[in-house]
Length: 97
Image 1 (spheres, rainbow, N blue to C red):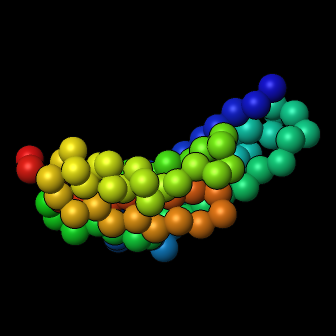
Image 2 (cartoon, rainbow, N blue to C red; image 1 turned 60 degrees about the vertical axis):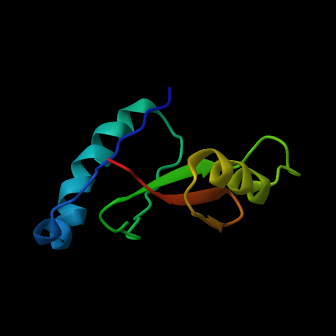
Image 3 (cartoon, rainbow, N blue to C red; image 1 turned 60 degrees about the horizontal axis):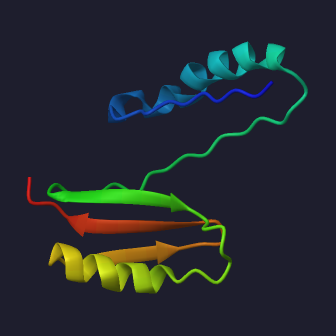
């Protein structure tokens, strides 16, 4: 049986306690079976007035994230920033709210 835990840590004063905060969650997951465990740390903050959207790899390996950015730019009327890696794309765009 699978399970997912997460920690959305926004308080910089708690960063040095990340392991202590995250470890109990992983320990609780050990009863769920022999599957692997891991964690990821994301630290690329977005400036005030912007939103960041992380998208997992599209099922179509030839999917063009750049075409999506062009489409979003046209629809939103704002510049859209794109970062890609092997398994995901991150889009940043200015928000009006």
